[in-house]
Image (cartoon, rainbow, N blue to C red; front, top):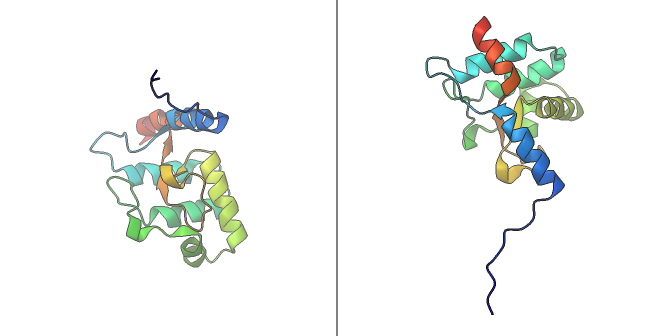
Length: 137
């Protein structure tokens, strides 16, 4: 007797990550709007504290202007952001956690469980904010 293989059951973390992914957009902007420009405007208008904005803008400086993607060879990781911002490792890690929780940054799918020292990051815009940002641009 053969049974059809079943997909593994999703864990609660998988379900939470899927819900978080639906609340974000990754470059789903109109082609005449550079993603990084829109992202930077959103960061500058957000209620983040200055250290968190500094880390966000240092990360954005490595991203492609049109798409907002950070190529593998330009990923700063934690130490690169520490060098770019002159903040200590703890401050940068806290800033990355805040950006991650608020939907401005995501870890690459296969790096989801890695620490910031080795996780590749990508810029994202919270979907709820994107519509308002487009109107006010």
